[in-house]
Length: 470
Ligand SMILES: [Ca+2]
Ligand SMILES: [Ca+2]
Image 1 (tube, rainbow, N blue to C red):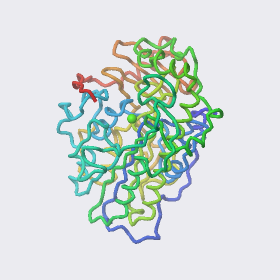
Image 2 (cartoon, rainbow, N blue to C red):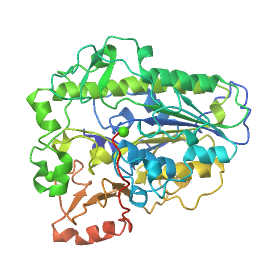
Image 3 (cartoon, protein in one colour):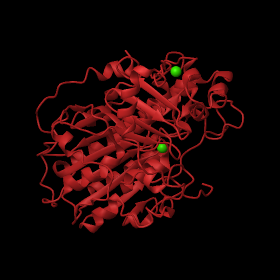
Image 4 (cartoon, rainbow, N blue to C red):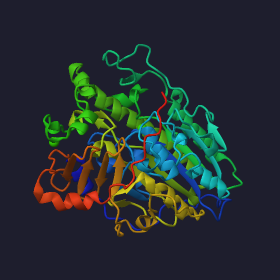
């Protein structure tokens, strides 16, 4: 069963309300819900409840998803850390801000210079906002977004352990494109420390409602995590992704340049590392799943358990050889599809799955709606609250993803339409072709589909914000 087939098995929902942890005293912040805002870096749909990989073990993400609404067709606004996160945290599209790539300092966008980020808006509405770990892209933290940060406002990510001899995978000049087990305890890992910090925040007595940002770095490269997580996935037994070696033949030049088949993919094959890479990614996912489980347990034991909204997201997907491509930085399903789940006490029911196409841009207006904050009409997303209440509610908009100026993908429930800056196109029918192998864009039979999808392309393609080295 591939991951999309799995998605068709979407469970029909039980109707008990989520998060009824009544064994503890009521939260002191009765009137306003708290928010636990968890981010995972570079996590594609390889989690149990999304069915993206048959081997993966993510019991904690799966049990969190069961408490509320899992969005099974959620997509990033940009398939790279910085533009995705800048867009999510400000509610503004990359094509409006001009922030398309990692080395573009997002606060230098004329549009985002004075943007009020999600946590700033919470603070303006009487909340305390603190964060830890990776919420913004590493090079561009945003101290005005937080009252306090772990480890610090300037250094958002605690250090990690490294294996003594690198690279482990034997690929020359591979930099952080490397993987292998570490002989250290979990508590020596940066993400574990971020979880510890979030747990300590949940154990505090807060006199104001809180917005708690908690960002995990794995499964971002390098895939160095404690050995026990590698042992969960013996390399000789892992399932490799389904890959069509001729897949790029019908892809336009700009798409081929994004795939770069002569770079990572050639090296992985040459050094016989495909299985070990898949093992490393799966191991890193299970490690971060463990960290998330600890935070969920701490929330359940806290006085805030019945009055805290949980939003968990990843910033984009990841290719592990599909379309002969590795990493993100492309507009196909593997790179745009990401994780989004929401548990909102009193609003979401348990065990719900929503197949409507949504984006990370929708998180900001959703939180405004759920927490009764001052409306912000300039935001470009749409509140997901109607879908949180009824995952089958009508939803007009497809998901827009942008990679580089004027390269866009539009994803609805059936189709993916890509239009690059030179006008070349791709069109995939997910009903018949869930792996996006057959580009239908040149087939006149689908002209009306392309036209309909093309109407959702943004009218504006802001010039690039100048890059710095990051
Ligand atoms: Ca990322
Ligand atoms: Ca193809």
